[in-house]
Image (cartoon, rainbow, N blue to C red; front, side):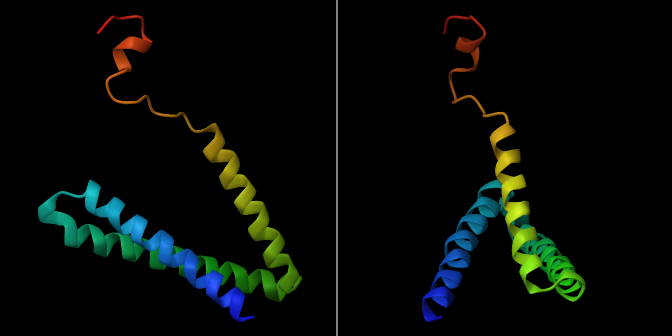
Length: 101
């Protein structure tokens, strides 16, 4: 059980730092505090909605159904990421359309 708790802690430890860096990189310097606040607001609302949905699923279909639903959402997310158009590397935009640099 302690191993599971440790793995559970590693996930937010890795992802929260990455997301905070993304907010810092994309927000203007004078609005960085507002950007962090807005990001945390949206994250909190999403977690609240996910918890409510999980509770409703648990009450309606049992505890095991939550894990199945989560697996389906993960697979859908992976599928959407696979369909996403990959951006071209910088400096190669003109080369791909047949123009010489």
